[in-house]
Amino acid sequence: MLLGCTVGPDFKAPETPTATAYTMTPTPQQTVEIKGQENKTQKFLFADNIRRQWWTLFECEPLNRLILQGLQNSPTLQAAQASVRQAEENLKGGIGGFFPSVDAQFSSSRQQESKTSSGLNTPPPAFNLFNTSLNVSYSPDIFGILRHQVEALEAQVDFQQFELEAAYLTLTSNIVTTAIQEASLRPQIDLTKELIVSQEKQLQIIKQQLQFGAVSETAILAQEVLIGQTKATLPPLESSLAQTRHALAALVGSLPSEANVPYFRLEDIHLPTELPVTLPSHLVQNRPDIKAAEALLQQANAQIGVAKANMFPQLTLTGSIGGIANQPHNLFAGSSNVWTIASQLLQPIFRGGAMMAKENASIAAYEQAFATYRQTVLKSFQQVADVLQALVEDAKTHQTLEAAEKAAYRSLTISQKQYQLGAVSFLMLLNAERQYQQTQIGRIKAEAARYVDTAALFQALGGDCFTHRTEKAQRTDQETQGTEFAKELGS
Image: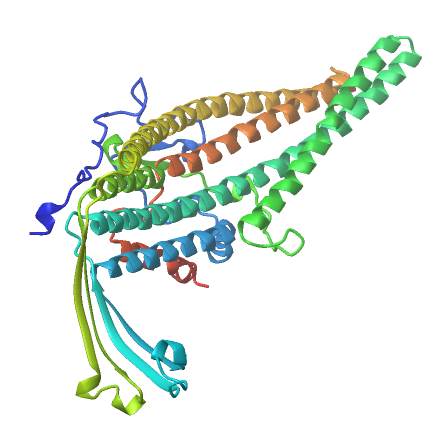
């Protein structure tokens, strides 16, 4: 009967987008193939689910262990886990409102009345007064105020749970992409140093040519400018490498000066060749940020119900039983017993428009939450589309620079043989070396971009994120993540 009196809207989850593709043009089944490197061709497996611990697809054990360290020590995850526990305890407190409140009370006092009030010539004797009672109060949730409040608390628990999943996904993705960045910076620094050495050798040759009048001083100045420009690129690379290692230390919950972060190399990290891509209709179920936005939408919907229910009568039932006596041992005697039973019905009549304003405000808050939800969905689909397109273009860029590197290497080999035969000058040989080193740097950057965008795809699709599990199972999985992962690594 009480459920039938509940006022306020019932929450309905927003409709799932009906899109059948992420991009405007059909995504190819695989990226372009790099000749001689079949392991660099990535295939898109549409409608496949992402495996748990997706980062293990990179087949890099130092990376796996670093992620394990991050999952165990990250303050961000610990804060998110504490937020979940706080929301769960608040929910338990809200559910407690469905039950009657029972309180025991005891008081004692010693009193003295004045002779004037008693009408006596002498003051009456002082006396003791003891009072004990058991008080019961209950407010039937006739119009659903409490039920809507509990619904809002449940939605808050869901929100914090999805925020935890988002923190988990962001942490693992950041560790992977930062490790890849570190792996790409080292060879860039080494090749830049080699390039500087090569350019300085060229400068010495040009200076010798100047002595014989073969070149003008302008050639020397141009070469010095080139060396200065190349040297200027080295400090930012070294600074980026140091900052990357500092970032890895912070991600795994360690101080930069105390962290034991491994060194990474691109050749030790495997590029996943099979990329599972979930269906667009399943993206809203996989992305924790979308589910968190939906939880906030449900919370806003529940607050409309609270505002509406506050306009209806509120019934409160109270009762108490106890005793009043001059001596403690007489408190439970029959002559000392007192009891009361009471009821109170409150119907708001005029509040100066405050209650209607609260309802209108809650409706506006729901509309805001719905718009935020839609924006989150749109942004999520955009991210997946961008990453899918980037992976295709990254492969093309990698293919082009791979071919350019091979061509530069062949040019260098030919120049070396010609130089041995005296057919070309040493300066031409150095130019061939410089071109080869520059194409190597470009190829390394292109290869690193493919690794980074692969990790970005897993993040954009929501990772595994413990989808389609009960809340208890989700909590269990996240709290035991480190233990299970350690067993898989054999540690």
